[in-house]
Amino acid sequence: MEKEIRRFEQAAALLPSRLRQAALALPPRDQASAEEIRLRAGRQASVLTAEKECLLPVTVRAEDVESVCDLSSEYSRYAAVETLREGYVPVRGGFRVGFCGSAVMKEGRNTGLRQLSSASIRIGREQRGVGEPIAPALFSQGRFCSTLLLSPPGWGKTTLLRDLVRCLSAGVGVPFQRIGLADERGEVAVMVRGEAQMDIGPRTDVMDGCPKALAIPMMLRAMNPQVLAVDEITAEADLRAIAMAAGCGVGLLATIHAADRLELEEKPLYRRLLQGRVFRQAVCIRMREGQRYYEREELP
Image (cartoon, rainbow, N blue to C red; front, top):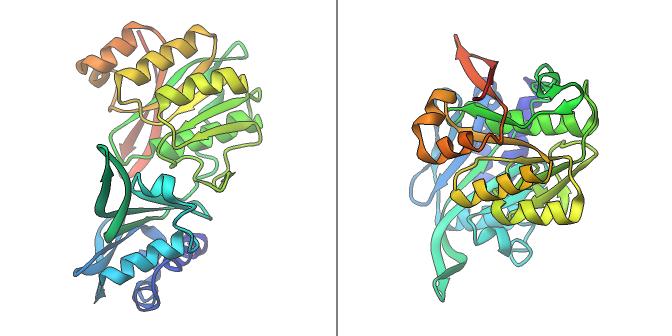
């Protein structure tokens, strides 16, 4: 619990003083289970936990949101412009701060945000070890088998993916692998100025903030990975890039929002993925009495 509270205190350090004091006045139990700190100009600040939303007795001003942006970008918005135009800033320590405001449009493209109105500080927590019991099941006769990680939203797919990448890269209970991680949304490695803020192992190369359909062929050409890891397959272009990688003999580890194989088969995009037989198995995240557990399924 002490470790979780320290993580909350690190996240609260990104807040202006009066908001920070209100956040740190929360009971230790709520601090330890906090997942996000939410700010909306003109509204009460709040802290989201796994179970509830805790309203803080302080109203957010627009300049508070601007201050969070300055603190999270280390007072260098220019250095953070590439991710800020996508609506977020990665922060040292493995945090990610999302922003809303007025988009600055140029020739049909968003080139930045101004007049910031909302911020969400996501408190990323590594769960080292969650992948260790599963990692050996991803191999057959010493060779990695391409695997999907499945669950409904918010059940820990990204957390599991991150720890499996660590296990494969470090050779924890399995033959070590060279990993290419396509981290399009910056949530797996949380790169800050070229350095991963999360433990993704010693043999992992990261293509950060790049669409998966572009990142996959770039890593294939440049980094010679044995396994490509991607978070959230969502588009036809992702499928084409994944199929190309499979054709090159590279293993694949990917997440999808789906409860199980049957739900995959109900969706046309994922049905085509199954028909291509790129992935040979799935690990499904289940819940029983509030506890997560994992089940392995063979794919047709």
